[in-house]
Image (cartoon, rainbow, N blue to C red; front, side, top):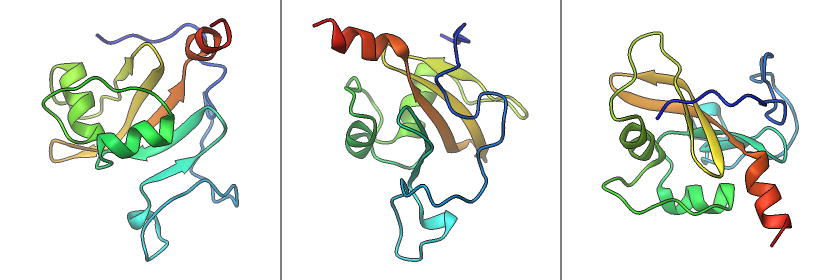
Length: 130
């Protein structure tokens, strides 16, 4: 289920780099405070850069969404199952669910390392109309 959404304007960094150092505060993380210890970075109110190793229970809290039950414990496992395969070299697949669009940004040795997650406009509209 690969899908490139037609309107990605709500995602920060659509067409620009977002790995610049900023004091935006939305990172969580390790005791060392460095990139390797970070589990996620909040880019803006709708966009996050999240480590593939983040447990599903923590992912639900970060994104404030429901993730379906499955044979996975981490974001990486969830996206691999949604994609139905391991991404190929040089590929940066986009996986869209009802609430979130995920773009696999970095992976190595069959492991997803970093993912950009953007809350879909439909998710907010659905919440606001209820």
